[in-house]
Length: 159
Image (tube, rainbow, N blue to C red; front, side):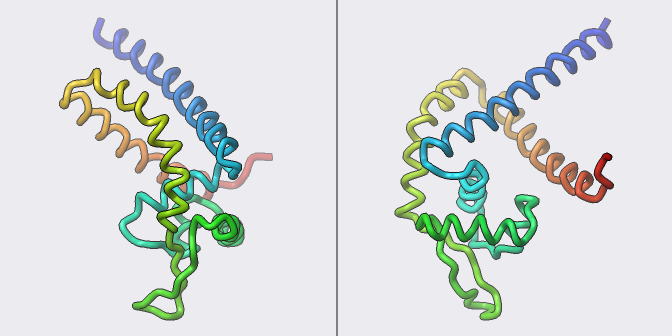
């Protein structure tokens, strides 16, 4: 009895995960269109602002799975838009760091803050224990996603 319930729950979770991920990609696209940006650029800004320190273009490429050439073009677009600046690394002058521009990031943050109130209300219905489970799941899903991306990139492409 427990196995059939677990199977049913796995199936339901799989379906809802696919729906959630597709909805998030489409939501991200809508946010990017609203801001007049590329969806990848919005996600890169999200990742950059979640980092404790500025990153190099190579680190951005590794984090996003883009080639260094594509990551360079992404950073070029963000720099033209005033969202980031390239600054010399004070510890290693041969490296250039990509640093976000807080005043310009505030434009993106304002959209997220406005939309975030509804997300906060969704989370308000959960207990602290449930929030811990959700957070743990999201952290593990993040790590697994990156491992799976590395695996996919190392596999030959299908014909």
